[in-house]
Length: 111
Image (cartoon, rainbow, N blue to C red; front, side):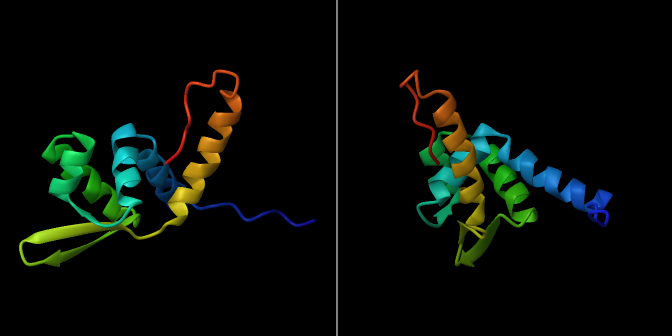
């Protein structure tokens, strides 16, 4: 049996960057809102109650990793999820958390 190919350091760093994005509750809140459809920075500030600077920085990070796209219409900029597979990953993790905390019955993990 041959040796499995290993990811390069560059590829591992890129992967770690995506997990870093997903490792922040504020950014997950933004993704949760964007799951419903495209939104502006102002919409996301209002919906998540995060500061405008924080939202803008998070959106920039998520766009740079390829999770989001943006489009400009006049003075408004709309953000949307580019790769909806991110929600499959979140659902896997949420499913595990739900199974682990099933006996508590207090929290329903879902994005």
